[in-house]
Length: 282
Ligand SMILES: C[S@@+](CC[C@H](N)C(=O)[O-])C[C@H]1O[C@@H](n2cnc3c(N)ncnc32)[C@H](O)[C@@H]1O
Image 1 (cartoon, rainbow, N blue to C red):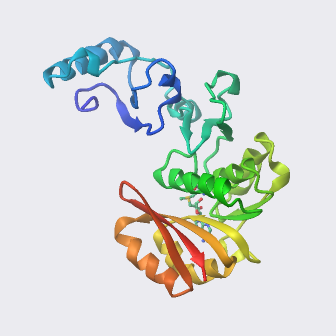
Image 2 (image 1 turned 45 degrees about the vertical axis):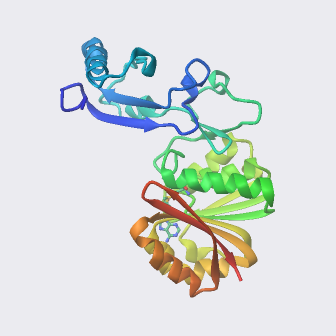
């Protein structure tokens, strides 16, 4: 609505199921924020317009509150634009923030694990629904039956590998065919102090060797189905495979491909149209 009324572009709404960090302390009920790139002289107009919508919708003043936080950005600088839109957030017991956010400024709770993402172009800021599902599973695994070794297939930014290492997994390896991924993931491991536990290389799942008690494969359904045989071989007997990045309509064919390779579905997870699952190697 903001965009159609001329209040900027690149309008994005983020919903924080676990509470937006910046708002947690003061406004525990606030769960979403809207960001738009616009000319600074439109700021007052945005607030007035949104207020008029809320009134028209019959919302009472106790039901909403608008906090306007202007950030001045050089629109010709892609990195500045990216930095302006990146906000720290909490997910599955991690406080995820970019390397340009100083840790001192983050309201970290006693049990939180801060996870710094080294900014780069490889996939995986933690904001995507599939990565969030994967992080949740990782936290559950590490709390209930922590693996000593973990393979992260399609590691991207290295977020899952580093998240595992931060929870004490001693040996974590990740690979990705994306040229940007291994250096970015290695840097992410270093800035989080877990460089010695992590190893990354460039390549697809077919380059991985050995068997692993825990495998994360947050890919896409086509890759999971095509790679079902290779992925199944990488999981140790009774080992666990997390596979994510599966749109609802691709869920059943992916399950069928895994079942034909001796992988038994243990748990199905959903977030919007995204599906993911945990399989056990029989
Ligand atoms: C959805 S991203 C996941 C990134 C990160 N692990 C996360 O959970 O946010 C999928 C990654 O798989 C990588 N990928 C593409 N083809 C692959 C293949 N054949 N084998 C392994 N990874 C692949 C992509 O480059 C991409 O970084």
